[in-house]
Length: 237
Ligand SMILES: Nc1ncnc2c1ncn2[C@@H]1O[C@H](COP(=O)(O)OP(=O)(O)OP(=O)(O)O)[C@@H](O)[C@H]1O
Image (cartoon, rainbow, N blue to C red; front, side, top):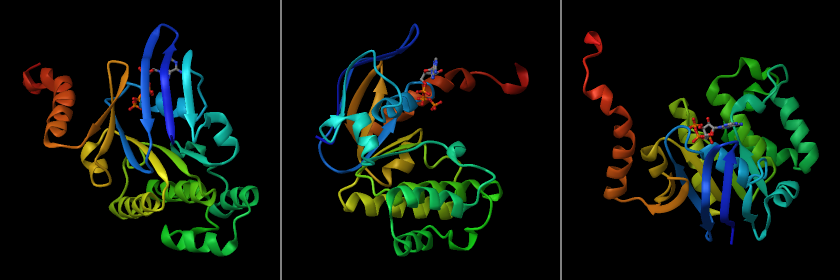
């Protein structure tokens, strides 16, 4: 089993996020994690990464407790780009990870070429666009060559170039036995990469395969939230 969550219970104080939830991933590949804002996508990824502890239940990755995989660098978690240091250069970030994971200069040069960041190595990250920051984050993760990657909203606000680069990278990794769990609000974007999804519904994690019905359900999930808007004239509130 690649990811195995069983009888998972997690609350923030009084607010229950997961109630006896389960999630199993047996086969490498790309899996989408879809849910409206505030339902628990980030919380779930943090639990799997071992950054949060469930009140009860088990979380195993590659048949070991999550934290252990993190230590063994088999797991990478791409959160938002606030983990980057604005006043350090791309080279500083890369050097730090490269030293810790002993990757070759040649491998790094190939990666930088693929993500189109070769020309920016000596620029401070604070001058980067959102897309460049996202490409640096994925490069830092790839230097570790993780078997499992957790990605929290990796497509948010990206330019088309970066979107295409990320899509190609994820498809390539999936073809080489890497497992990716990618959270997004955007079923259509994720559907370009996978037809395997997990939805968070009523504090449970539900596995679904992309179909026309799933698309309808997704529309319903979001349109419920907008119903009040369809019934008013914004200029006559
Ligand atoms: N540290 C915290 N303490 C208390 N409540 C929290 C904490 N972190 C998150 N929450 C609440 O838990 C719920 C789930 O949060 P989470 O960030 O996991 O949702 P999400 O699905 O990732 O949402 P988004 O799409 O907005 O990132 C939200 O209602 C949020 O307000």
